[in-house]
Length: 350
Ligand code: KG4
Ligand code: ZN
Image 1 (cartoon, rainbow, N blue to C red):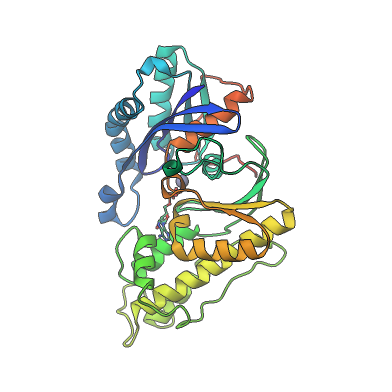
Image 2: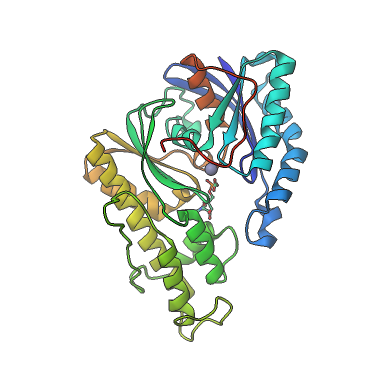
């Protein structure tokens, strides 16, 4: 079954076409138009601008996805679209396009949760391998770390998701972005912190690893962000204050990255071991971080887990994961109502 997937929940306009079979996903095209450069001057995603840019891009991105797949629009069997969670005005652009396409082509429309799609993306084979068999099958535990979300899930298949833990305040990517801003590093902060950290000492500053009593898989990142502020500018100093003399940005970046990745890897490995699953996957934009990848690999393997880290293109926002999850739901015979709601909130695993 061929599925066209649409993703517009945040600042990437994405359309992909996949061929789904039980246990297999062949990605025929996976086009992403990023708005990052347009939001960079504002230091974060501006929802109104994002929605307008999605509306401008969606047609062109879809056309390119069909061209790259070598298919006519009539050659797909279903449409999958992200309907939650995300910026509602942005979600509505993708949903509007998907509904119109489904009506015009008399196709089933399947609504997908962005977070479950991120989890599902860790099952996709590396695009460079040209394999179509899934790299991983449920049950597994997935650490999802992005700019908007940070959570640990147990995945038993489409619709069978259990959230084991989540952040109680900032998402991990948000913490990287805020720390980068505090250190005067460019947006998006994650890659800039990682780059600066390469020239720094991860043991230079001891940032506390926060644990929350009785909630072993929950995270908190707001304390470490404040700790970075105080360390670089002095106690109770405003964010605008100049850096204290002698502060080495690279050392602070490396020490923050070490603390954040340590706590993420630690809880994810513990969750997988305690759930008794054979595999641990990571996904979301922060999964691009090399230090996080290394820690999860090292500790996961030591704990006897198979560790799966998807290709970078499947870690960040994309529509292949949406089409692939939509395909899996359709293969299961899930309902396909045309009228669906776009929502800021995820319903997955909560
Ligand atoms: O999953 P994603 O592309 O978008 C959503 O938030 O849904 O994740 C973007 C987040 C941003 O906060 C960005 O700073 C972070 O992922 N990020 C990284 C790295 N690359 C991207 N964080 C740490 N290290 C990286 N190399
Ligand atoms: Zn995402």
